[in-house]
Length: 265
Image 1 (cartoon, rainbow, N blue to C red):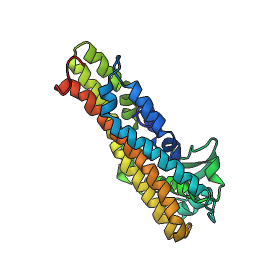
Image 2: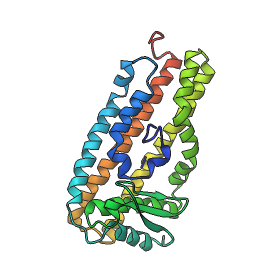
Image 3: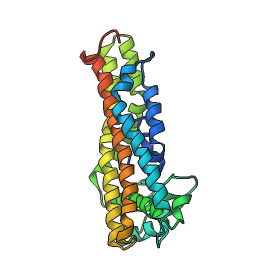
Image 4: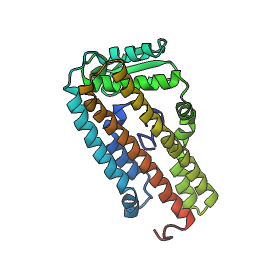
C-alpha cells in the first residue's frame, strides 16, 4: 500500500487495498486541481502529466485484472485464506472481521484486526483470496516487526498534517513573499512525500508475502497464480503513480523558490 485523497487528503487510508486502487485516478485528478495556484496554470498539469497518465493506465489494469480474477474459483474464501496464512505464521492473535462496503479491506495494526469487505470475506474467487492474502501480508509485517511498516505507521500523523496544510502554507508564504513560510509549507508537504516513499515498498512487500503464502500453503494452484499476480501487480502500479505524482508536485512548487519557474507564472 498507499498525498491527495490517496495520499494527500487521507494518508491514513493507505492501508486499504483495492479501495485505494480502484479510485486512484479520480483522486489523482482531484489532487491535480486542488493544489493548483489561484489561477489556472497549465504548466502544472503538464508537469504531473506522466503520473496522471500512469494512474489512468494502472486503474484500467486494476479493473480488468480484478474482473477477470473474480470469475476464477478458489477452494477457500477470502476470510479462510487469510486465517490459514495468519495461523501458519503464528499470528493467531489477529482477528478477522467482515466490514461493510466494497473494497474496504484493510489491516488495523493498533487493534490487530484484519477487516475484509463483503465481496472478499466469504467469496471463493482468486481475486478475493489475493486481496485477503495481501492484507494478511500487512498483519505478518506487523507481527514480525517489519521496520518500514513501523516507520510508515509512525509517520502517519506528520504526513496527515503535511497533506492538509503543506501546500496551503506554501501558497500563503509565496503570495506574501515570505520565503521562510513558503519553505515551511514545502517541508510539511515533503513529510507526505516521505510517507509515500516509505509506503510503496511496504505495499510491495505485503504483496510478495501474499504470493509466497498462497503458493507455499497450497491455497492457490500454480495455474491460478497468474490471475492473482495480475491483480497485485496492477495495484502496485497505482502506488507508483501516486508516489510519482507526490514527488512531481513537490518539485514543481519548490521550483518557485529555487528560481526554476518564471516569476510571472
